Image 1: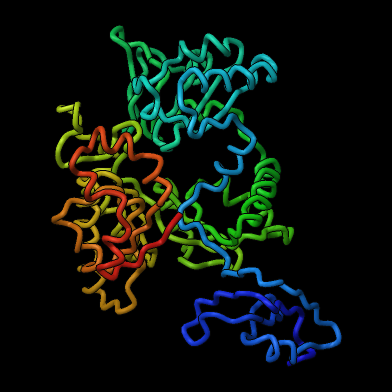
Image 2: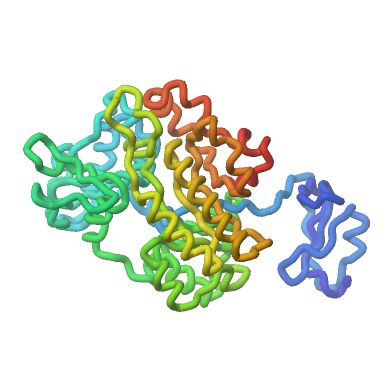
Length: 431
């Protein structure tokens, strides 16, 4: 073995997650894999003539982190766009857009991400007119932090051919004023894409370039793997990086509703790929999000007695799509934020588990609920009973608590709570 060891890390505090050796001071690497763990003396005894040894000087080493829910193409692009995350007022958001517009030629798009009107002193949705005042010569498209709303100016709406006669798409909504004119706010991806699709697309080469820059940031923070939920253009760029041996993140690539028929027709299988890039599960949306108040609720939002949120995919359609995917061997990853959405998805999974049992499956597919931001107390045990993974994002608890307190009231006692599921033996993954 000594002649095979490529590198050794020693004199460190190494957390292994290995039950027999949870803490060691040294490890040996060969062929890109950890091949030995132990004390400094034990591992340094494996040094060969070409082994590289690195003294950690007591530093801590942990396994690489995996983000279980990320939109990687969107994240990579956002690093090049206007940053509106945690901007405390509409005025500050507009100032940042104005600065970007001043540096952008007339007619070219200004894009940004991260605004959340719920944290502003005035939580009313902004308008196209607000953006027109600071960027009259560039089309502007700004996605919300939730990913379930967008804010566009009049020029962007014109490019997308959205006017008072444009119908709401299925599963989405164009907000309108009293006269029926679009206000500039688009709710849910189905409506957002009306404007997003009007933006000239980047080439695969350009997307891959943005990903390489984002990859360096991810690696610097200890992130070595991710589960992606973006579209086929993301997969194309990831494949380009893999072909060039430039992909340094291990990626599970999930796919969305519009690609199910193609995947089934092609006979693509879950897990197809290699250690760096492989096919994951089938993603569906049950509801919207808390930020735009479209998460699907059992009881209405506080202060909005007629608002129960939005159904993005009807329950019967969820079951049909999930059944087809499961029969082909794909695990499901279903977005559910409101308590009614979580209940509906659990009902779907209960029927799915019955179908899988009837097929004689013993190795159950690793189905997931994405987010589980609010669960009704009657449903807290059901993920464990059905062996469903809770894919949760701790950052939502800190970003959403003010809006949750305001619009969910006493229900927040059952929100943003991974411990509730961990104590029941549920596998919880973070992103």
